[in-house]
Length: 401
Image 1 (tube, one colour):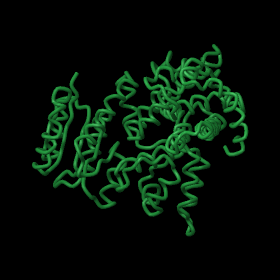
Image 2 (cartoon, helix red, strand yellow; image 1 turned 180 degrees about the vertical axis):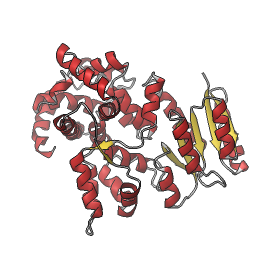
Image 3 (tube, helix red, strand yellow; image 1 turned 90 degrees about the horizontal axis):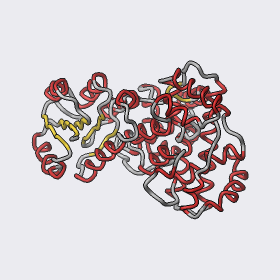
Image 4 (tube, helix red, strand yellow; image 1 turned 60 degrees about the vertical axis):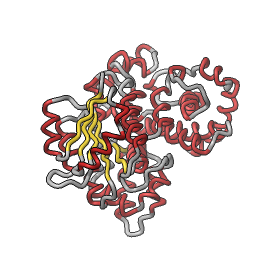
């Protein structure tokens, strides 16, 4: 079924260039071009749309306002900002409404690739209502103690971007949001960055202050049905898995980017659980109780009750936010890596093993059920015999988590 995609730019010449660039996609996409945001909004009322791509600087309703209106009325629609240089005020207005920000001039392959990757994510979440819930998320909640810590640091006279980066690197929600901004072209960076600390340095203290203190891109976790111990246990498991995953990748002599992706994917591998705990607390609590009662893995209980698991939920949002395919793949398949079409040592391999080994080395959250290692997958990669060495390496890294 063809996708409906809306392009908005007040420059008719730009739209004509986009039509020429994307002519090869006419069989797969139904493309609609508008020079006025008002006309695009009228069209959205008449037909379901999958993706909107909008310029930022336009007369009348500008790009930031257009994307905000689309978000409010059609939360399931993927929203991409496509713009040349814009001042920080304009960009800041779009941060909470745009999933991704692509810089002009944008070649056909970059734009096509962004949309194709988003479409591929649809297979992860088959339920439209769940896709809409995830797609409308602007921020992810942070551990209250870390939220207070970063607020105090940013409000202090001697605030340090290095210290801010260190705090962000300890938190799931902050890490996910800061990497979304850096890996898109929101602030002119647009490069593959997998280190939250490096991301903070690239953005700089002034931009981070504006994002956090004015736009509130970070928030505290407030979810019913879960104790403070449940929440802090999830954070500790995530950070420990991140350290283990990087340790495993390094022990295999993986390239630096694979090691960095392994750390970030380890930190974010349960971000879908955080999303579900905050937004579907009753169903998530039922899945946890079912897992404890039946002894089945938590992700199987989730799938039985909700039709999907936290891995797919987290992967969908991180993919929509523009994080790398390597990280998205690791989130989506970390419980069942054999389902991944690629067969190579990757961040997925490291995270799958690290998630399992956290329970073997330190013991993970009890409510999440048993952890099973995919021996067939590891055997295919020729690394099954390395698990004992990985365990020893992770034991030495326990103090770092």
